[in-house]
Length: 99
Image 1 (cartoon, rainbow, N blue to C red):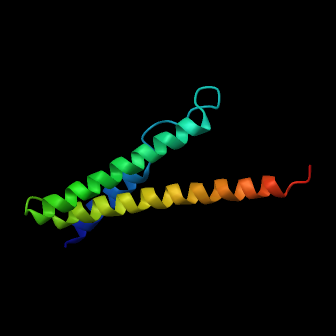
Image 2 (tube, rainbow, N blue to C red; image 1 turned 120 degrees about the vertical axis):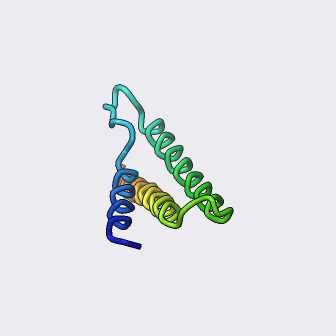
Image 3 (cartoon, one colour; image 1 turned 180 degrees about the vertical axis):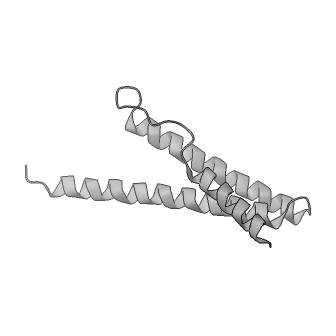
């Protein structure tokens, strides 16, 4: 792997980690709709990684494409898990509040 390929992979991962849709205000979109959209994006990213792995196994893809797709899927999954953890923490804080 040469430095140019590594830089290209890094740039590709950074581009994939950015949200694809603009964040909308509360009047335009609900929290549940936003979570559904993010989960759909995460699922698509994971499927793209699986497709890249299958193409590589068949000899039709390059290793750098597989690594990039898997890294992007990993970042997407970690983001969803971090949001989930924050939602659970907020729920637990609300449940500790006295009535």
